[in-house]
Length: 365
Image (cartoon, rainbow, N blue to C red; front, top):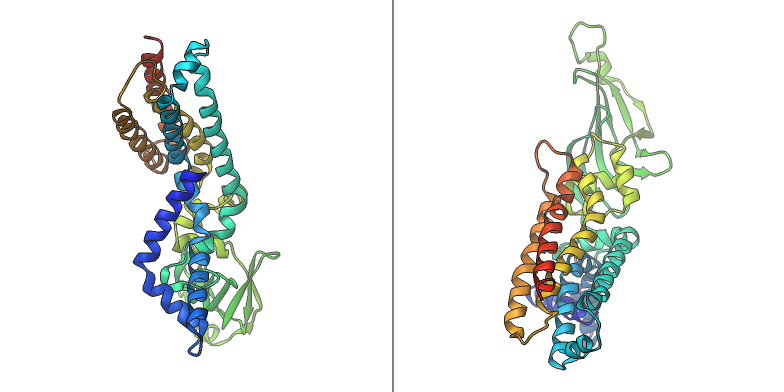
């Protein structure tokens, strides 16, 4: 916990220093032109906490495996310096038993990350995705929506989308037939997402019938194009979550398993393979962390005198690239194979490597 907090404070401090002007600007705006110096300082500090606080959970998601290895190294190095390993061996306790608490702690940190992913991370995702220009806002900034397919033959375009209130500004929905011809044009001043009805409530909505289904090939009929009728709701699989994922791909990695299952029900709206990889990665990452810990332990569970600096360098040179490579490997789709294979491929590779390192260090002595 100490190592994790120190790393987070270090990373957050660097980010604050590099973007100090943005925090000061936002603090001055919040305090007002007549605000005292103390009020401005309090506002700036509050904005720093508001901006960096939610990132604590994302930082843990990325760093918990690495921090576990680092904490193991610091702990065993202290035990080695104070001859505690010698005393343990002299008492008849094997190094295999000594390794078990570290493996159990690694498993515990991975379970905490699973709980973090399922119950916390998706809640703070709109705050985590904020840019520095949006410091002080309660969610990510709005963005325009280009024509997006909803998986049911309809296209959506909007001048703006605000993820906070889940509101579209001046949206346009184009419903098309089987060969891609527009048959209905729906426009509105704004639209709000209706969770219960799974669609958009339209303000000042209008629907224009444009399709010609007579088979003549004329997609637009002049009389139909000028007539319209009001409409107050349109069903769509393009939820605010789907629009946010299309804008910010990182948002998909923060979804809970339940949310991923919901998104997979609309396979033509989102990248199904990517969502499947994110789902399987929740469990493969636990195995990867355990295997990397098993790979790193032999560098510090020493029976004979050794240079701890050298052992630390060897451990870092082995564990860090392995963790980074495994993370990248879990996110890369291998052509011709199902997503589950690419996600668990690092586990398959690491099992014999960790076993070989373990047996080479302990069974030979």
